[in-house]
Length: 228
Image (tube, rainbow, N blue to C red; front, side):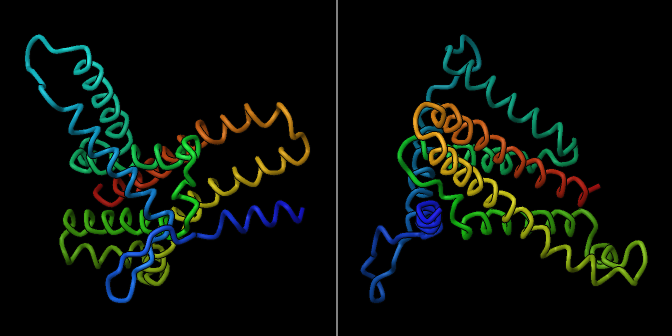
């Protein structure tokens, strides 16, 4: 158990891997660097995959790309509804980013979603977008009036919900990713040979993708509720 505690503390510790010599030296955490790497990969991949697109006589690469994009759009639109189509690009980007981030351990990186700051940042972005969509849809008067619905006595609870939602999104994503690590360490302690391999593939791939989908699914539901 001491070994498990040490490994857990190591996973919770965000190490400094880069120092930028500005204003006395700005420390850059490992989670930030890995996030930059993922962003660079997504940017380069999007530039390469969208080169030489055609309307007619399309290539197999373009066909596969269009099928994947349309499938992703249909999946998210099925959750958020017709009125939320303009939010699909953001939600699809978050889904792809989290999918790669949660499975980055396969490539030797520590998943940035093991850093509470990363998951909290994503959660705050989602809730700010939700409230902005609600404000735009209802206008200032109806927006502020909605906090007193269905009765004025629940106004403090409705206001508190704005802060509870990002916390729940943050802790759900962070907790599941970290929980998978704890389960894997326990399995390695009990059965160190053979059995951990398939479980590692499950937690690193399947569970990571599921958590990415759940985050986007809940964000879509919040936005859908706000604009309807």
